[in-house]
Length: 304
Image (tube, rainbow, N blue to C red; front, side, top):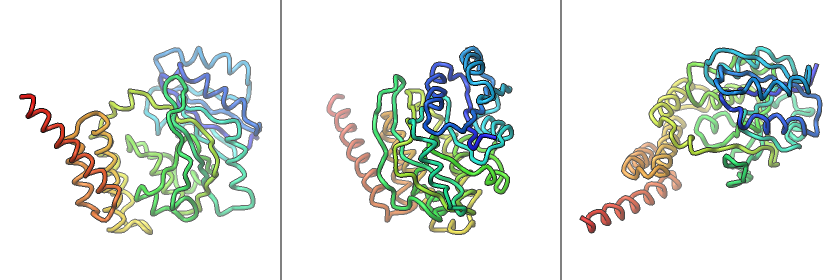
């Protein structure tokens, strides 16, 4: 039995899938198996995977299902897993060769650790590095469930590894969540186990212009659903709830601003400030958006 099952959900990602699979093949740790779930793709994902099935044999399990969404695809992969550890890799992301080896070190002689994560970079559609996130966060490891709830810690999906038994204890990904299902799982694990940080660059997370068209209202609904679902858990009380809500409205403000929707961004930033006025970063975001919005309004007035 392999020591690690690698969970790869794929939906119309044939363009990027070879890079993801090749990044597994080049791992310095070799005791792995890929569990790849084709979530009802309508592109040539099956044709792309076929030569890898022949090449890798039992080291690749290919499961095809009707389209059911990302959480359901990950759950299907987990149901087909049997290894001690599970590691996440989305079909458009890429691992560095040390990814598995360094991640598994975090669990050695540490039964209290249920999940580990590391640093990642962002790459564009062509694979060029946009930026690197490799700064140790204030609440990086240990018993950090409240900080996951409050969005005070970032846990990049392609760097996540967790014990298979954690799923048996806390349940699978919540398929009722249309977003934030990953943070929901990490919180449930962190309420029972310690989280370990691997202080190394482990993966590249791919971004695309399509990400900018995310349905902001759908995202907000899922994030609020997550906050209410876990309200009252240890460390997730009234103050933590306000901080968590502040975080999602700040994120929403930044997303609007990136799309040039300054008025919507400013309103979201002001709401974030009202929820928790003590956060300096949120205040700075609101101030910056206010200056940009006022400047744009003056330009429009001058040109009319």
